Length: 229
Image 1: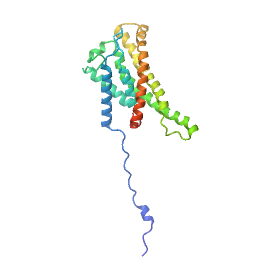
Image 2: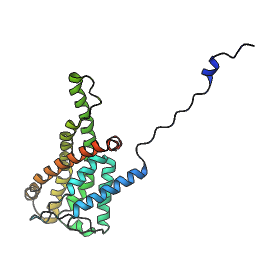
Image 3: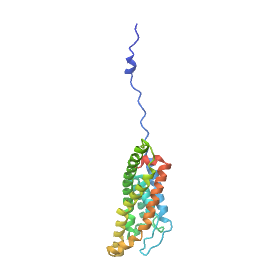
Image 4: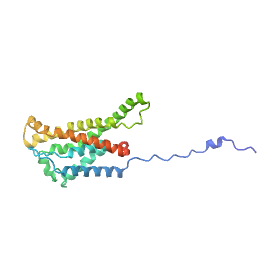
């Protein structure tokens, strides 16, 4: 008898490939959200610099923007929202070691309520910045060194993340803060704006620091860059 045709082997069912491993999970999301909410709380209760308006200069903005840049818009926004909710529930984690809904009657209410939106917007802008950094680095090195796709675009990431953080801060925190000052202090828009300007130099420095820390985190933990969302 002749042997079976060789094409019987080809007809055998293909071996199923294992499903790709998910780079993120619910437990990971919960851990990161909780960790950054706690980090924001720590930055908030550290002694701040008093100002005449009753709204001290603290590290809250640094932590809020960092959460958005590192975690992405969804997880960064949720981490900051968790911080705000826990503080309003009574935990003494707001600036000055206070908590509870009574803070909503204070002049800092606009800044506080804008934090989740600032983190989410920083996450959106941060994602655009990171993708733009990849494209800029690829085009920059492609002509000079050949294929530049695989090179780490750290040089482009930092300035673009700084712009992302500043954009998120000045589009959310400062307008809301000015509105809160006007409502709670009963002052005019120019007066509230003059008070808010006091925070601008510190805000710029905090965004510079947040971008630097974000770049360092992405360099040390590349999975954080791939899984931000």
